[in-house]
Amino acid sequence: MKLSKKALADIHTERIKKPVEESFHFPVKIIQFGTGVLLRGLIDYFIDKANRNGLFNGRILVVKSTASGDKGVFDEQDNLYTLWTRGIEDGKNIEEKTICAAISQVISAVDHWDEVLRQILNPELKIIISNTTEIGIRLVEEDIHQSPPCSYPAKLLALLYQRFIAFNGSTDSGFVIIPTELLPDNGVVLKEIILQLIRFNKLPVEFEQWVNEANYFCSSLVDRIVPGRPEDAVMKSFEEDAGYSDKLLTVSEVYRLWAITGDEKIKALLGFEKADKGIIVAPDIGVYRELKLRLLNGTHTLSCGMAFLSGFTTVNEAMDNPFFLKFVTSLMEEISVAIPYQLDRGAVAAFSAQVIDRFRNPYIRHQWLSITQQFTTKLRMRVLPVLLEYYRINNKVPVEIAKGFAAFIAFMRPLKEVDGNYRGEFNKNHYPINDDKAARFFDLGKTGKPAELIPDILKDETLWGADLSLLPGFAETIQGFYDQIITGNISSLLTNDH
Image 1 (cartoon, one colour):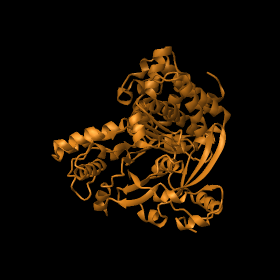
Image 2 (cartoon, one colour; image 1 turned 90 degrees about the vertical axis):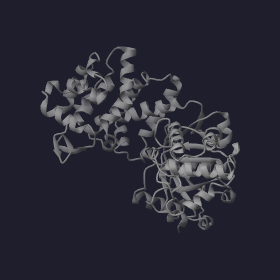
Image 3 (cartoon, helix red, strand yellow; image 1 turned 45 degrees about the vertical axis):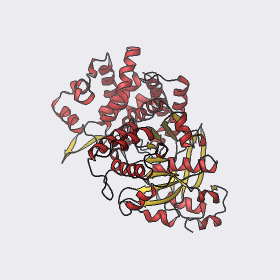
Image 4 (spheres, helix red, strand yellow; image 1 turned 135 degrees about the vertical axis):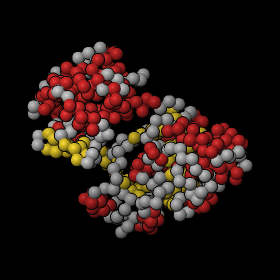
């Protein structure tokens, strides 16, 4: 049996939450650009939950922007899909299966742009959401009267202009526009691109005024691990338990966050904020970005070299090792005192506990090797501000961060280069180094003396934007840890206190 609206009557297991009939009759209130799993696993789930609790009573029109993917699957399943949430929360195992009915229709922008333009005339529409990847929000100077325009901002501008004309520029016909692309200040960036495109297309000044005064561009931050299509074994296990097949089955972790920049007026316009504790509307969401960037992403980055070289394949596998768990916990404590942002200590402690739960999730097979991609850039963006702040506060070496740097340098020793592809070797195992700076490390390894390798790396401002060799004791501490790693004593960095 395939999932569909008709099949709902034959799904009897109490382990699956089914949608109520009235949810299929709610009006469309949201246009969403994107059909990806993150949207289904987070944003659309929140809207579905709000509908179940009588807080929103609206559905989503999804615009499929690209030619890739299969819109037909949504049609076959009456736009229904199952979200299978599994993981750890507050130290407890959590599992939930929910058939989500938030999506009303999926329209292809490539094939039916005229229909998308027609839909924008619906007076019930109040919200526009997007997740078009980070490169989706970029300025492409193009005519918005194409069918369709190429870029997402141009598509959005075409819809806004159509709306402006249809409603004679009324102040209550505007939208709350929320990009969810992983881009800092994404709402601010998107609005600036829209204003530049207005001028490029020579649109009326009155329209630009309406965009500025009747529409709200809200920056947002999303955080939830939602892998791609589940493995065949996971699909089979689900089908055996549920009694139906679902080609759109979406698996996610328990943790969820959608932080939206806004005030009480935005909360009222959205209407769904109280549906879940993971939805936060606040004037400043910088605190959530810093917590995620430093304690989640920064810890991942500083841990991945150590984990991979220690022989761990996945994150949860490493977290099952008590010594590695202690390393990660100590590392997070070191990071937490040096986050360059004014933070409530209680919030830091709570977020740290959530990160540990997420890392220990046995259902998410997050590969350490994949986390090493663009290792150097990640260190510079996520860790350097913390490192410099730690020195400013304490004027001493952050020992756990130094261990992470030592493992990074050991991992980034390319021993072989073929056609611009670099590979490292550790314990006779070869691995790819997917990093834009791999060539620089390869050159340093060839031309420098072994004793000068670490100082040369740390003082290279093309890598860091600063001379890290000037930090008191940092190079010497890294050198000691590095020597232990390359001589096969990496386990001692986890089992011994330094």
